[in-house]
Length: 275
Image (tube, rainbow, N blue to C red; front, side):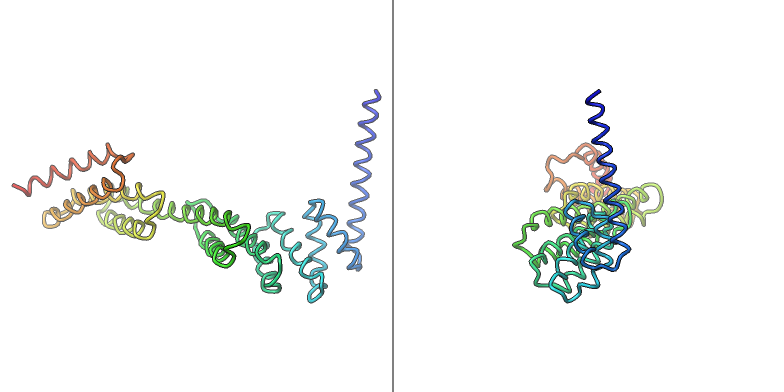
């Protein structure tokens, strides 16, 4: 019984505290007292109530332009957007902060959080990668500008993830062309080979390099086997070179059985020309 009364008392105390906090917040929010809003915004920020802090900072930020507290206000204001996951606005506000306070002690952190805001907007690889391109440009600019930053290591991890996502997107497009080449026109196989060649040139250190080499073998083999007699021999030889390249870089490839099967078909066709 005593424990129940104690729990009820504690619960009621929380309700009273919340009601007082809400009424105080509404009162200050509607008032014209800049100082009161500033102090309450700071209180909410420190307590982790970033949504209410954001609304208060939004009201007072213009009042602090050019004032000593302006730098602090605008950084916290920008960061509240990041904390409430409004990443579009956070990225924009951090950029404004850096333009207004380029020599701030918070410049490195603001640049990183601004870049990370765009990273948070980057979609999965199968969707349009415009936001990924933007995020990668921002994070790379941070890496180049702040090589001694405490956020440098994390920025490199993010950059690697963004590049990997773009590579995955490029590879998936090439794979689609490869598949279409098998069931529709040889033009799709030609497009696949061109896309995979570009991928391998532009992304020499990619984690998807083995996959790209394999799909080039598939596309070039399909193209060679289904070509006209006039073009067939040359394309068979090019397909065989694709096999050799995978063997060179990945002697124990995960695609070995499939590759051996395709190579067998190529070599069988080439015997007709050796005769």
